[in-house]
Amino acid sequence: MNKTIKFSTYFNTWLYGDSGYYTKYSPIGKKGDFYTAVSTSSFFGGSIANKILDSIEKSFLPKNSTIVEIGAHHGYLLADIIQFIYTLKPDLLKTLNFAIVEKHKHLKNKQLQYFKDSFGEVIQLTHYESIQDLKLDSAFIVANEIFDAFPCELIYTNKDGVRQQAMVSNHHISFETCEDKYLNQICDKYKIQKGEISLGFEEFTQTLCQNIKHFEFLSFDYGEKYARNDFSSRVYQEHKVFPLFDENIKLEDYFKQSDITYDVHFEHLMDCFKSQNCQSIEFKTQLKTLVDFGIQDLLQILKDNADENSYLKEVQKVKTLLDPTSMGERFKAILVRK
Image (tube, rainbow, N blue to C red; front, side):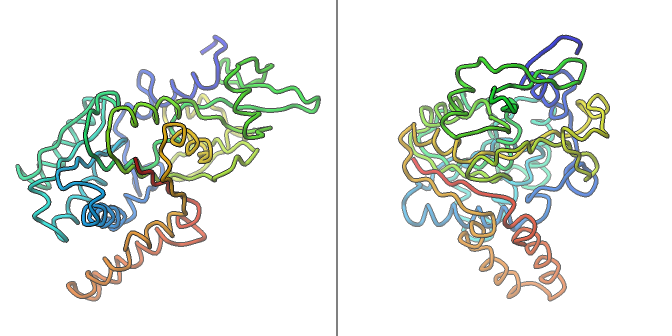
């Protein structure tokens, strides 16, 4: 790592290079480095299932659509969605198709084993190597916390007004004059003085829109609609958070061993979908989205059919998903229709 490289290359190597953090199976939740909505409550997936059923009932999606998850890790979210579809509209399992986009063989094997343990031979799971391989007529695509793992560049405008980008050598970050045309265009468009610029939004949205004729795309992630004009990059290890520029940490101690992430700039992402003629784009907090998807109705069904202790335990989990001081407002959702 003595060679000077762009921060995006360093970030990509950290997560996806040889023995990168995401190339290994790392637990999520209490035993892992961080929590996600999926690890918090199965009703997160249940509310998404409820949304899918609503889209089918309103004839936006046909009954033979493919439900696709991108960035599935163990496969828990898609499995939760399937379980709730079975509970609410079991006949749809005869017509719907289910798929995961996953290139890592060891993760594919874990997903297949989990689905076999959960559903036996009832559910047939299809794997795609990448979104380039998705060629579908109709789909509901869900991607939980994937955009914060897209490689990014760090931009900083110094006191003299010179725009600079981060470079890395031997795990040390320095800044040099930014001469990258794309980065300069993004900074000018969104008035970014300081922060992260995601790479890959344009390619992702273009590929999705070209390959799938008719779809709904749903993603949850932490971030804001507008650029925050500050660095949000941070490292997660055993539920502790370390800002990237914390002078008390050495990046080499965390490199490939911990998660590295940053806040998503949703305006940039939404503009990329708009450029592909996707005009139906909703942006809301996780709290508002899950309530709109009927998560409270699902809790009522549980209350009517389960013992009080089970119901109260699930209510506490769902509260974490909806809490305005925690996940409810910190996480945002984008729902795109084509």
